[in-house]
Image (cartoon, rainbow, N blue to C red; front, side):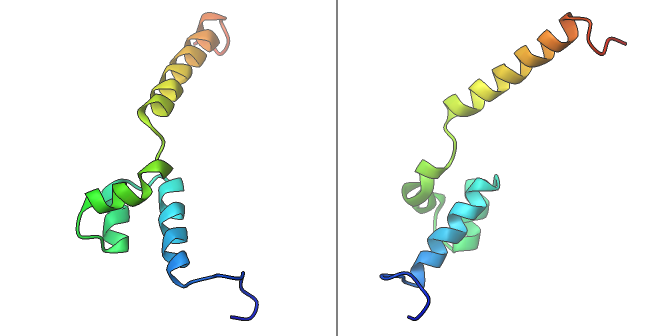
Length: 79
């Protein structure tokens, strides 16, 4: 197809949609519904590597708590 990368398939747009949904924070059930997969297992088997893992989210949560404690313990923005 002119103007498209060599080897482009319309099915590639489906993968692109899934990756955009996941990157924007959509959960597995939303992605499953949009792609019309019969089960969330199919969605996770295909795209599971794109979701942040538990280590990523727990590190972010702990980092946020430490940052807040550091901010408030230094007397910054004290009420």
